[in-house]
Length: 144
Image (spheres, rainbow, N blue to C red):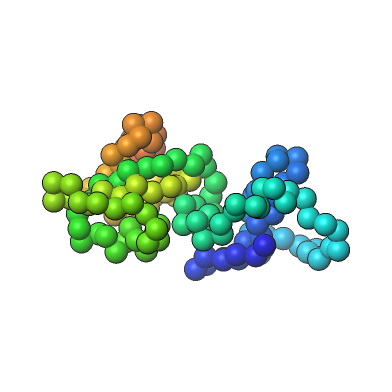
């Protein structure tokens, strides 16, 4: 299956050796040809949703998928919906917005958070908060 984000096209295919769906940038490929062989991994694609896949990945980077709760002010609701889509759980708590999103935890996800700055925080799970904090500390060390 061929999918795209705003910048690139990706081939999404089943990797038999890894027994999972992977994505590959088309512009990094050569010698591409269509085969008449039947596709492997039919079961993997049964409940696969391309829109959901694109919303949880950042720059098509993989990462462990987690349900993450984000807390932010109401004026950032458009930014969060633009990134994760309308089919996410959002509610208001103590004057702040809380969204529960499924995301591939990765450096590009952390970069997205850092780009927004201090107005958005990971509320849970604690393991992702810790991973983000460690990522920020490592980055900061490079600049000291």
